Amino acid sequence: MGLASVVRFFPAGPWRVGPDSGERDRVESVLHSDALYSAVTVAMAQLGMLREWLEAVFRPEGDPAVRFSSCCAFQDDLLFVIPPRSLWPPPPSAKIRWKGARFVPLRIVEALLAEEPLDEDRWRVDGLSQCLVPQEWAHGPFRPVMRTQAAVDRLSGEAVPHRTAGLEFSPGGGMWAAVDFADEEARSRWLEPVRAALRLLADCGIGGERSIGWGRFRQPVLEDGVLPETLALPAAAAGGSETQPLAATAYWLLSLFSPAPTDRIDWSRGHYTLLTRGGRVDSKAAPGALKRHSRLLAEGSVIYGDAPPRGAALDVGPRDLPHAVYRAGYALALPIPDREVSR
Image 1 (cartoon, one colour):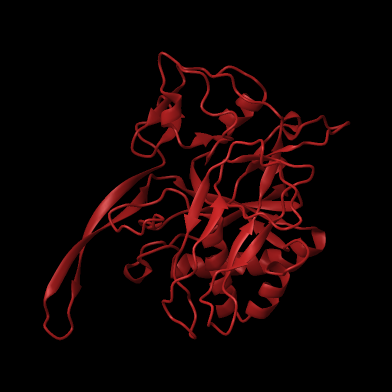
Image 2: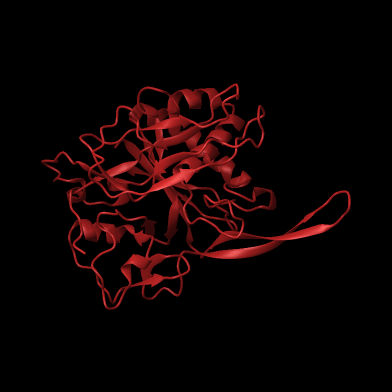
């Protein structure tokens, strides 16, 4: 891993992250990494840096200058993640239905990697957010909500009501993501432009229903560091000690992942799921055109290889479009011990 920052988004109102099905009355709890790439790319275009950004990130050969994880919730000092599928859920408990938690605090992953027992009296599963939260919390970091709206026909004046699902966040809560830079040169060049793009998105919004003010957030907070130290993972979690690191072969995905031709993944092993991603094109050449569907490995997947997974950017634009439309499938992954929980 290169030099990284953790960025926190403090929402100023509801967010809408559309599900893969596109249904208005459903909402996703994760802002996937490809959507974050798309939002930042649109912001870079507004800042007059599109060409340079595309050349630095969406290039056919070599590593991208910047990698993003997917966005998950946080609350106060707890960062929630989709845990490694090789370690979650733990063995069944008489007190907690562990598998009901889709998101867990990062410190829970630390405990699992260190083979420490989980204190069943300290945690509970919040049903609305599917988060594993401390017992003393009254609710999770967010909750799905439904809002009724109406589209008004400009000619007839007739109103057509509809319902839209979104996410509302608790005070002190929001979304977070990791931003990984390829090296010191990439960090020096792109840290401030990325910060500027995120500040622009704070005003414009991210996700769906931006025209009614959803998806906005206060000025983002970037915490500098180095992965995995930024994410507070102990050295043992990376597969070795500080003095004698080991070559890890298991990688825990914090982002979506589309394998590059050079990625050597052992597909006979691993714990992973696939997502089918679609969406619409944001281009003057074909406004609103549908992107071609693509399948990517989901966050929380654990894959095996002899080197860190790189990933690739896929051209998913309509075939007659005069320019490429990229879907970022770059992997942001952490090495973890080659171990599975006994169930």
